[in-house]
Image (cartoon, rainbow over all chains, first blue to last red; front, top):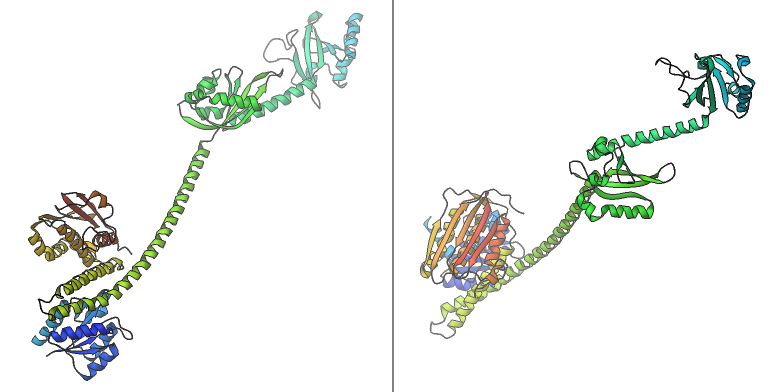
Length: 121
Length: 496
């Protein structure tokens, strides 16, 4: 079973993603900010990170840099209410950029595709 | 006075002395000018400097020697002679025959009159020179309106030589017929009658070739020696150059005013833009804030939909929640698209390729509705410098409109071609058309005729095209369809 680290400052989003991803058959670890996420990454080894961008403290783009500097093999999906970060070249190093939507099928499809690709390689 | 005195009769002597007392000089001279006798007045006229020859006493002699004939003036003809000495003095000389070929001469002092005449002549000469050489036209007109004097300035201004105009009516030559019938001369007459003169009257006169000359007219009356009105002197000054300068000045002033207005308009536009941009920023913030709760509302609705049994009555309410949230999310996306700052990273885009890509998501719906796509893409279409993503958005919105306008089927024709400096893309449907009453508003944000539309599709399309220095237009007929035309320049500077 793959484990997914969800990083988001919104408790309801964390709750929704936890429920949906567990139902989809993933293990889920939650972090409410970037600092906590980095801590989780030191301890365990999730297979994929779903990373919010707009968060108090360290934002998702900076967190992405930190994550990749420690472990550049872990796939990261940026997940934001904003589309503007998509054009920032800093976000290009993420494996995918999914704009937040009530329809989680795009996010789930991206997770599945990335994990499958990793599994094959 | 000794010469020939003995030859005179005592009567004549008495006359001579009587005339001398009245200041009239008398003399008798031989034909060659030798003075035979003179009276006291004659002697005193020459200050006692006696000579036996008249020619020694008179400046330039007394006669017309050298031209043949007698040097004496004809008897009875008055002649002015100048007497040698300082200051010069002038005398009227009249001669009469005297026995034995001699002459009797009578001299009367006329110095004062001669000097006065000279002074007047000089003055007139100066005046004439000034008038003659002036760039202004000096024209003298007599009581019958006939031209009596015509200076060089008049010749240059009006193109007539003096010979052509002297003795002719000035009004027929110089005053344009339409002004004559309008009573221009009558007005001048009135002013002359009121003031006795006319100064700086602006009107128009006519040259020999019929050219209209804007002039300033000054008129003064003059009188003859007896003080009777003899005519008037008219001075015309060509004010064409002044008029041109005034016109140029007025034009400059108008241009400055217009520039001023334009600055003010731009200022107002900038303020409006600033306000819009503030509204845009706020809308973007609000939209982003709304998006997160929408994700959880709709997301949990989806979760519940998956979990509750399909026959449960609450299911349809959850479906409504899900659909309404999707609609809200779409509106939020469109608002964010609308308020997005313009991109400046343009790339060379092949519009044909973007059009093909745009059509793909609609293929299924088009087949369902029975819409037949017709492609008329120009081969080798010039590339356009643009944001491919945004142009894709424009075509998507246009195709979406076209498809939605033809729920009962029809033809969607997509055409590309080129104009003088732009690429033209037209998207034509054979659908319901846009009612005339709504045509003026279709590019306005939040204007929609569809139950589920956000009213931003065409507003976004128009905004993007304008940011690309292009134009978007349409023509529509109710029941026959709508054609949208997008023109994008080949080469463009990204608008900021």
